[in-house]
Length: 93
Image (cartoon, rainbow, N blue to C red; front, side, top):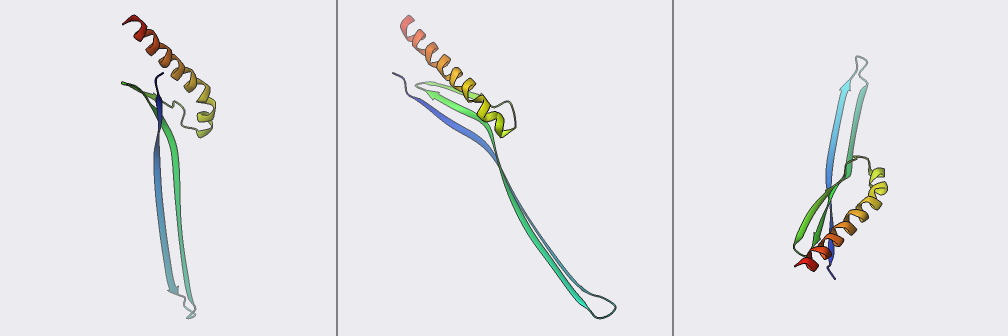
């Protein structure tokens, strides 16, 4: 039986920003302000499937994460086809 390893490939974006200010009005009132923020996104891009000596990349076509969940049955089918193809090749050798 062939072992299959599935490696997820993701794109990660990280961003941060900060700003501040201060000043004085004509009436000698002082004011200050500041702010900061950050964000992270993780986007699945593909899967690398390693089976014995065979390595394949299965790209995720849609950029939406929800589509990843919908694509799992297709991914499982592709892996099953790859495994079936490998068994067929070894019988012919």
